[in-house]
Image (cartoon, rainbow, N blue to C red; front, side, top):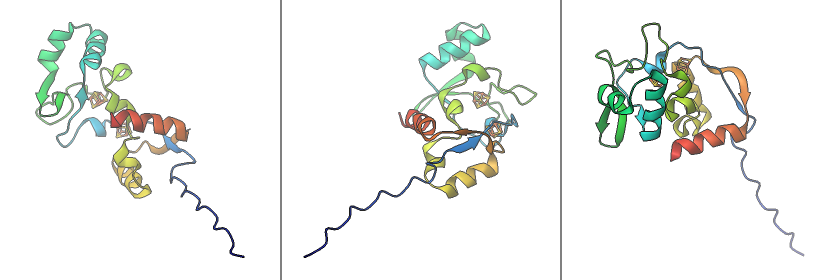
Length: 145
Ligand code: SF4
Ligand code: SF4
């Protein structure tokens, strides 16, 4: 009699046991090479309110329209316009989703190698509290929207 084949187990997600992260406030991800920090109307309103500016004024001064949507402007040296001279985000508590979700971006989670690659640019990766799989997946999902 032929034996029934066992269903093949799903391969375990490489970060199923969680990942550690604690921002070291080095400012590296807010400066350096040109980039994009995408914002929507809700995000603009939150940051503007945090800075005590009318949303319209904030948008005129600090937001640019690009092919994919709205992004924060950059300084001439490509620092994010919200990075202060001490390397801190002036709107950290209400920073845009992509900043809040870092480093749990789909591109960094695609493989352990990609995560380690990101860790070379971000000294907070691998340090601090353990983020559980559900937390990681929630942030990854938000970034996919
Ligand atoms: S590169 Fe990493 S440690 Fe540095 S500010 Fe950005 S998130 Fe924090
Ligand atoms: S909004 Fe804040 S956290 Fe995001 S890139 Fe700019 S300075 Fe950095």
